[in-house]
Length: 231
Image 1: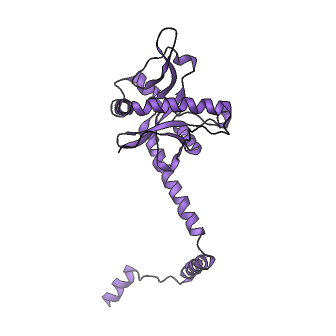
Image 2 (image 1 turned 180 degrees about the horizontal axis):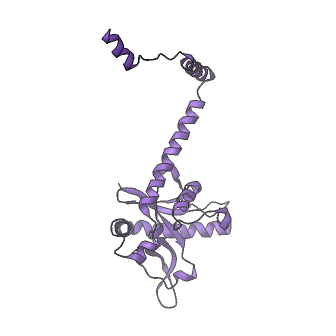
């Protein structure tokens, strides 16, 4: 059975690394006052890779008249309509700002309402629940549009210049992800080495010192070999 879409937080340090090479990635910099803004999104498969599509709040003024496009999907509240008879927009998916991810940079979001939640937390969780429900029912549409956008931005960047300009450079971000994973793996290996018993670490250190103190045997030069042969 196919696993349903879920909501995730993305590691803030990883987001900063991505933003440093591509300003289209949402900033979480303290200098912009957004260090506590979580990067929330759903995970889908794009070009056989995991990508996180960021969610954005639908109560923003600029989204009221914004239409669905190749790089943006409106999330409607199908139980509420505005004065024009259209569904109220409660959120959106910024496909143009989607980022490559790995499970090591993801943390599942608990959207279950708890008795300890304040009114804002309860309201946010109710909205996220509605958004996630819509995404789960429209997963095929989301995945199809995400892959189409990836193909256009990566393989046909000159076909739509304006689209290319407002999209992340996906391949550049993938390079950052690979580097981030490698560094994280190296840190884990270092921690495992330090966690070894002192006697083991001491033995390794002693052996390394013994090897470094061994006299270096010089190899006979070719000229000497030739002289010996001539004699």
